[in-house]
Image (tube, rainbow, N blue to C red; front, top):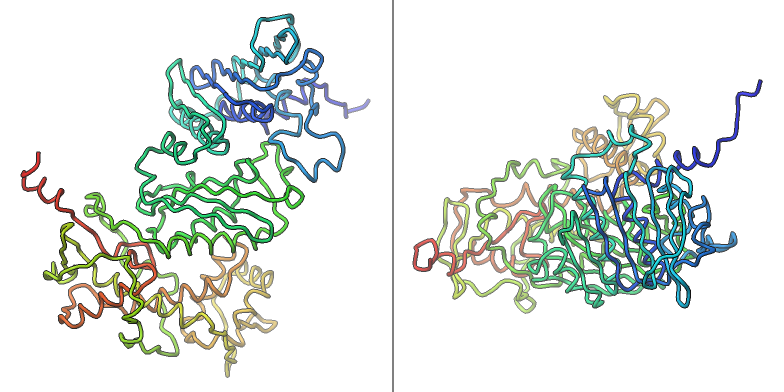
Length: 565
């Protein structure tokens, strides 16, 4: 008796639906992407009961002809690709021919569509089968209604989140689709209430205003760079607007919203010196690249993507963002929420490598001051006094400014060490006696797997996993801690660069060597510190993202004294 049998199409589609249709937001994404591929200029999305009861997507695209209407819902039926070579140059959002078949397998579907110079047609699907069809009055375009999602797979319902979460996921999906297509008009209604609307003006600033609010447009930085036939255009929202999650770092490749760990980290690293730990920026990055250099056929949801050389792209993107932020004048924060924020971590806790080193770099203040090249990123300030032995007080016509003496010197020292390490070569120091490390077997296994990386930094081991050499700038007592930190970095990133290691060293060095709180400074030292801060490429934050200077403007002061109500 045969135990192995070929699944029928309906069962296969229900199983496939688990990869494509996770929740109502997934339905909206797939249907809207089809509308975009159909050259629509206007797309309306309606959802009821957060999409579980009903989802409707209406577009004014080219429509689907009568003969194609039935074929569109067959598995692996698509108009986007015809031959194997087409997979190497995909220019459409959809191409796999799985989404519609998966949707009808787990819901009830009504589709209406009309092409130019033909009557409109409709088909009704129930339980994966056609139960009705005919002619319908309709404008050119397509209207799809999906009802009773997961009605025949109730086990899937328990994996959905709360009503609020599902609603927010629908809105987030709408935002990404709208941001990736500024020339298309979008409208989102939930339970017949207008939630969001964009106007298809092809104006990204207007689009961001509609999605995020007008406040994010203030102090925004625009980048537009081309390298190796790759164009990168980005809209970098001011570092003062941050998020607790990475969701608002939006990467679009050839018009497709994608999730790419490398590129998202490139944006975060580009912002790194401006942001507090565990805070993330708001940024839109649009990448145009030859489709031949991409592989979008990674997962049925088409969110993942592979580049021919993602390391090069990550490096270039990080440099572009870092230069754009460092070379710009930023607004000094004056929000009272910044003043009230309590930093739970001590400055020592920010340092990945809290170590001592074998050498000392002379940090003569005069080395960091170039009177001719002092930038204008900070306003002219008049010294007033000191608050709590830590905050230097200054004033001008705009109000009161507070400078944290520790973070200010930490910033200028950090930039000095970065320049010092810029051309620094790691020198390997051999040990007189090999060192036995107190690590877990799993740690040694990872070291063996990524031995080339450890060798690059000067760490060499014998066959018994005893350490034979190390980089000369580390003391022997700190070697185990450094190797442990490197293991952690490699486990999370699968790599670690010389730049990352030396950057952490610079942060540690600058933090330990900077003025501490309640350390009294002379007027000459204060003037000297401010000159050095003015000469910094980023005078606004310390290397860990804490502000160096805060402004309380005259309007806020007058409100506190009830002169303005």
